[in-house]
Amino acid sequence: MIEKSDVVRIGNLEVTADNMPKSKESKVIDYWMIPRSVRKWTGLSQMIRSDFKNKIIGSKWKGDRSNHLKRDEHLQNDGLRGKSIGGFVDSSPGGARTDVALIAALGLYYFDENGCIQLTYQGEKMLTATDPASVLTEQLFQFRYPSPYSASIKMDEEIEIFPYRFLFNLLMREELVDDGSILEDDGVIRLTQKELAEFVIPMAKNDSDLDKVVQLIVDHRKSGNALSPSELYNNIANTFINNIEISGFIERSKGSFWLKSDLDVIEEVEERLNKKPRTFKYELGSEIEFQQRLGMDPSKSKFTHSQSSNRKSGEIALKIKLAEELQNNPMTAEMIDKKFIALLAKSTGTTEETANKVVNEVLKKEPSDYFSEQYLIYSKSGRTFARDFEKTTTKIFMELLGQDKARWTGKEGKSPDVVIEILNLNGLIDCKAESGYSIPNDHFNRISVEESGYIPSYKAKFFIYVAESFGKSFEKNSRRIETKTGAKGCGITAEDLLYLLEFHRKNHFSQESLYNLFTSSMVITKANINELNSGDS
Image (tube, rainbow, N blue to C red; front, side, top):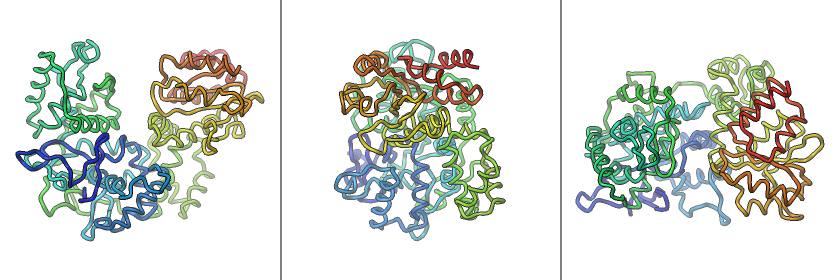
């Protein structure tokens, strides 16, 4: 929970227990709030693994500033928090404490009688999860106020609501269909960030306020007036939208968001909303039980105080190692063989029998699916997992071209992310973990400038950009590089690169075909890959 010296970042604002904006009338926080130490929740499972590996879990946290500093340093060393030239990002490790406040608020950590961090059942699931988004989605639909977190920031006790369920309920209301004034008149129910900031964050106090909030939004839309919510509320609204993105249920554009039109998504949201959340309330002095209830096994209806899985530490280590292997290596079912089991057992100091048991427990779908899901998360992570995006892209090209034909160079500094070789010709890959990438001018210069640019420095004959998606000017700027350097290139989305890998496994494309594809001077699509398939089999 937030301690007096904690720093919670909401957009560009820094909010502490001392300077937290309060209602003049009530002297308490009378709007929704959630800790924000990270913009996206995609890295929370890695943070929990770091805390486990570095023995932060099980150690005293409450009031132990030296432990807060240690955690901040561990996160930096594990690549989960940036470093500043002079050392820590902050002289006070507020970020480390806010991480823990968020993880606890979600019901993944609790603090025992001695103030030590402990894992709830769902916290342990996150520690070993191959699909952490599913665990976090479960917690979204259980998250509620009041709670130990809301009490710690002096939130109004009258706010008694399931905030994330409230948002999904709004996205199911036909009265909020977009008439074209938000994005387009296409029959889709949409909400804007400003509507959230104006009518939800400060005004929704109870679940029963749903109809009232819907009517406020409808009336506002009819008025045609512009909204100007406070910067604080607007940033909080943005944070809540960022949070529900982890579910994979929503899309967003131009300050608005909506449920995906996929029927399976709509049915799953309806099913989750129809399933009543567990009934328990926060009372002062019941913090440990509340946290354990919030993070209990979702398949159980009866609460017992022992909610951990009671697994041996060797099995936990095995699950963590297996999750990391599956998420960071493009594996197939054939690769999970006796040799893999033996290496897994040896690396964790357990028996092959135990390793085989854990593998059978974990593998509920194709091994390649775990990698694909994580790779797509990396592709949209920005700087958070940029290195992981580069490394996993390298592994994909190792399989496409051969183990010795792709090399990760991102760690070398002032270099492309990956260097590859096809038909004895050098190629470069730059990985951009972002959407709408278009090769801005500084990137154009970085790759093409005479003598010191990546292309002349590595004597490259072609180049590839891998990103979540590309902007309209990408192909034009790609041809500019070609004109200046003579090297041809292409772009390919992370999703389509995975598609290419799957087709390659079935057809084993020739080096000539892959070279022709990668020097096509366009953004490669599934249609291009299908043509390659039909002409190369």
